[in-house]
Image (cartoon, rainbow, N blue to C red; front, side, top):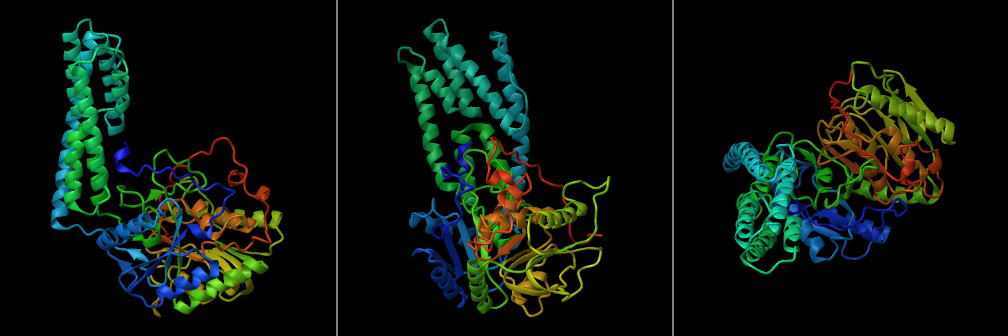
Length: 560
């Protein structure tokens, strides 16, 4: 139902329309003195319009608490974009040096624990009572109208469909009543049922559009319509305050009074999902992608609706692209911006280094999401480039990691696995792009004691990388044979390459790099017709685009 999301009418980016500078907002930390000058440097480098920097007072460390993110970050960015009339313009937010890397777990207060417990009790009671009461109404209608066939299903979506089917039949029967008293009685029963279970604008239109003399029943229906409209306006005001317990209580009362028990059951579940504390740690930028979403489960992840295989349902708020311009030292942020601009102008030179581990899928392991699944994507990429491009490929496919400092002239890199133990594969060219598939490789960036791969790769000159802030599971990484082929076409900038190939949001991975960086823009290494068939619809759209299922969970802590 409409009340739990913004009614956005913003179309997704067309495959032919790449991210533009005026679609970017830069987020800086007011408490980090290096943050704002770096953003101003980027504004000048990429010629962003005025009023594209937002400075917020954030913690001077790599983690922000869940509550601080909810109360200080989300409302402030929304307000800034709305007040600046940029809410329908900005499609990408870039976090700068000084903005925390990670959002801590949701630690419930005593009041929130009590609320969560009461919500679960109330939900369970409603989940029992509502289907039983609806069944009773359906049986009563069948006794007077044997042609009525009730629908089935007891989850909120099915209950809503059942109720609408029932109310339509009740409305139609009322319009055919033989006398005014019978008609009035049936309308009264319909209105009472719709108040209790949840009204539908389409049902109201169905009934009120039937020609008849005005009467008491017309006023009853008008009253119900007006009540729903008034309540919807009030709900819209409080639903954005998800962090406020009083706003949640008010929202549930408004729903119960104005939209009925079925919608209340749905909203209670939304509030339960929001309050559930398990697995709520997230990468700052990954969570920020859902800036415009009000209520959604915070435990684990959400599917990324920008992914090339997703077909977003209607009336869902937009998912934003997010990126990060960050590095161990602030001067390195300037360096990676400049290196990217130069490589973009001259063409990124060098080889691609791929380090798979000779792991193959086994009959008792899921075909999607397993170690063999990801390892095969690296081998697939090597085969594709050897047959379709002129780029030099160095492919190591043994169980051992590529020997440290064993090669030079690296432009692109993808490999795995050496948990939080960076081993440089060799020397990287300016503008190079790459990532290492392993857990918790962006737990930190700025401490001298940090040994993760993200800090190591950035220190060794990469201009773009990505990594998780905790255990991500394997399917959190973009597949090697999705990410790199798109980048090599030069048709899409880095932000779109990542967000079209990353499966998850509200989860564990941050991506570092200039969102507009397009290293092969003038020297493409692959044609769009060289891409794997699944990627070609991005440039040659078919009539439909299937939505994939979520892969099985494959933790990365011990990939042996």
